[in-house]
Length: 211
Ligand code: MN3
Image (cartoon, rainbow, N blue to C red; front, side, top):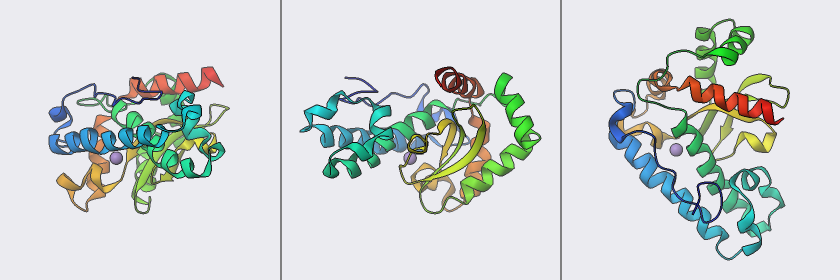
């Protein structure tokens, strides 16, 4: 069992369900991780169960190259490998109480691109609010290490556009509805308090050292 290759295992949280309160409530974290993410994980395993050839593809390859799979596998892999990949990033990028501000390289890049952190937050929030239906807003880097904010729909990932995610927010209703109902706006504002900028910085360094 592994988090990154078949048979996929549910990646545990680095915190307790109630550690993200008051910004995200314990029930939401519990359902989101233990039910929603578990379902994506189980469905991904089910999709690959009878396809021995593709069981050796790791999670990154599955989400990046799903269009090279046999037709009947493309949709289940796109949705479920995407679901596993996006949720692992989402849960990993949060920490109890957050770490307040970007650090080091990302701080400089954000200041350079957006002027300051408040402007960055405003633009990120706009993209998250403007994501129609279900999806994610993502801060990404391209191959040259240049950052931008984009939106992806459903369980699409930034990898299929050769962009690499540094942080992302899940704006599917299941990520906020229990506490915020239709107030996606408030959920986004509060979510900024949970970002672990050290993990973000490490994500960026991993991206730029690899490419
Ligand atoms: Mn979700």
